[in-house]
Length: 463
Image (cartoon, rainbow, N blue to C red; front, side, top):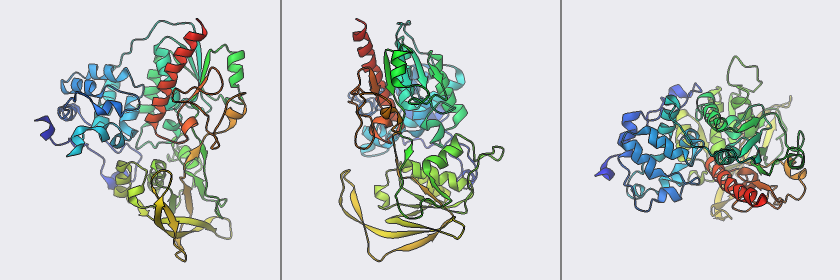
């Protein structure tokens, strides 16, 4: 029976080798491996995997096509709902979404849905097989602020339905967090990100870079001067958080946002690029999410001796299990139940040590996780010449401050309902700009919901 077939393992770079380079860690499936893995799917009558997917990819249908060896059909099925399948196949937390809902995972290993999606996307790109039916132009213009996953997903659907869509991006390259936040060894920029953005542009979407909405243009001017019928704000959450402890202003202290942006967007890891970044000997990364893993594994590849400091236990780490596993394999150390209280500098103002305190878990907090409590008298010091703060991010307040009638929460996030409808008529929002820092696929799901809401709004507006 299909469910007796063991999950097909995925080939990867050897940990000792990959820790010294920025080439992609996972090689993915070949055709034979993908077909074999696809035969494990039970094709449930009520597929829980689909309802667990934020963009509602028809997972059993594309897997059935893979099992039949019809990779063209598989690509067409995925393209109906996802604009970034090669990205999602690599960075989505499938273990808590589609694969986490797979019935085979109850007593064994779930179908490797993410790896199959990646295979189909890569095969489609390499063989030019992706085709999407696009509606005739309807004459209506929609502006999208931000070219990250929320903006790209929203623009893709709207363009598919015949809208004239323009994306406005603040940076010099499109992609948002896909470009500046996720390292090359997890998400290749030219081969994957640029190629999938090209697919969005092939739908007729225009992307204008170096446009800071709130400065270069405003939301009001997009309506009043540019003639857009609606505006979607998918500007992400790029404002880093710090702990506000002594020593955070020392040389050698980075936000993970800056550290990763210098390496991913500005190619600081390459010897032939003149982008300044400190190649530290002893690096401490504070945090336990995917961004912390990305920062730690990047610092390791730059030659650092890297430790992650996290105030809870490994069980509470919010990062993907795969990323934690890879970090450990590559040599990153984990110091659990520890929390920084001070960064100590030398006489020249550079990081010298980081002072931490031991923690223990108390009662659950608002998220359901047990709250960490410091243990009096348990302080200790770690030698370090660089500290990377990976504590999450919040939205940049510029757009909200320069847009009349746009309400925000006390955390600075734009207030919007599940369909992306904001307090300002004609303005929609989704992704990290609304929720705070979350996952790529959740942002895409928000972009798709907003696109549908925009379609309804514009049609009612022009009745």
